[in-house]
Image 1 (spheres, helix red, strand yellow):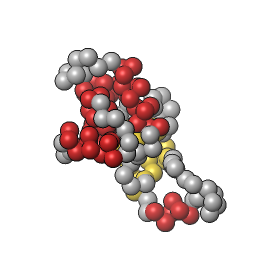
Image 2 (cartoon, helix red, strand yellow; image 1 turned 45 degrees about the vertical axis):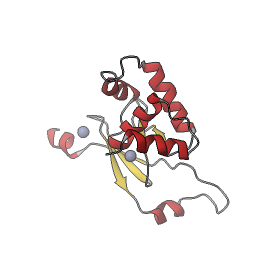
Image 3 (cartoon, rainbow, N blue to C red; image 1 turned 90 degrees about the vertical axis):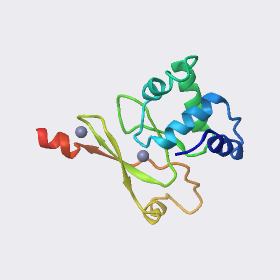
Length: 140
Ligand SMILES: [Zn+2]
Ligand SMILES: [Zn+2]
């Protein structure tokens, strides 16, 4: 659980002005590692922030992604962009049936081994396994 003050401090330390929307969305991502869509975030925050619009959520997410502070836009789900706060590199497993995106921990050595060469500065690696989660597979 992060407090508003802690999230605000985190954003400030990264050189980002901690507006109420940025804090709320960043905090949501930190506390809900379920790879939400912008709509999911909007639906969750709107009751407490009636002035929030879906456009603001999109703009704020774009800002957080481009700030390079660990918020990533995932293409795992071909239907919807999903967002993830990544503190340790991991791959994803995407279920094409229920749309769940699950984390798959991979050690840093594996990722380093995937760097194309020693000089390239990797900022994001997106590795996604697509298929069926065990629940959906059992239903088939
Ligand atoms: Zn599934
Ligand atoms: Zn993830």
